[in-house]
Image (cartoon, rainbow, N blue to C red; front, side):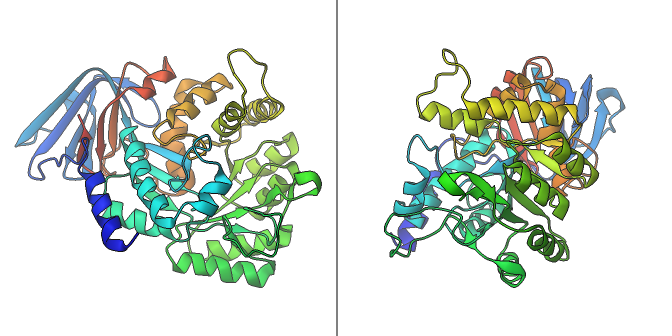
Length: 425
């Protein structure tokens, strides 16, 4: 498929219902609802005053400054929240029960994967997620860079993107893998080894547009495909030092206790998955201010694709272990980021992670904070997004009902504003 054809397909996708509705840039906009969650706590009788793409006042409606010309949006029965932040997404993947990961990487063309990503970006935005941290293109090279720029230029609708580009793995550790090893095949992430190799690859990815670097601190490359650490502590420390010198963060895929321990001691920003977190590991994470993005949805989704029925069957071993490690993280006071590993399951269904976080022991208000202010703080974007606060970008959503009482209300998004532009009303 040539570039002209791809462009025409993208234009058709843009024109489907639910596109951009620009707010007048010369008017002030007052948005009111029954409740307002500002990223920290719930309020009643509050409103938001927006001008162009910024929040200029938040508070009790009677105390907001009088501005003209003024337009009003009344959202009865609804709750206003900051635009949600998805902390672990793969817009260039689609649900594994549609096509297995190996087959997506090996058999789907980059053009197909980009076109799919356009629809995924829109579905994510329309679910109320105005920002995503996209943690690897899984074999699609630097396609996320172009996707991000296309959204920024308003060519396509989608969330603000924080991107990792290729991600880094140890040679031989990551897939896809073939029984005939004579074939040279595309990998789902970029291989690099040793201090010199890691430094070079991190700088390559930064130079090509990475907002952060993702490293796989462990993976299923041990005997009998068991998950084992991939990089030494010193290698990880070197990587973190180099990346931090650029003003960026390192995030680490880690599910084993030892992989998590090395990543936390190296000073990564977040650990993704954390299936076998222990009290000792969580103590290190707390000491080094490392957050956990638990991705509770991924194990449940994968189990369901293999025939597991949550309603009628006992939890699988992996789901049981995930519940155990997440419960311990909550008890130890680890900072919890919101992120579901979307792409394993369908984009736009991001709220399922919120529901599982509550089911696994978090309070609904803590989950709302995790998906807004906590993610903004941990990711380093709290001067732009994550709160309904004067001076921040006008990323605002509304849902029917009160999600602090019933988290499933987060599925009922009825208003979406991103960067001052209304996408759904």
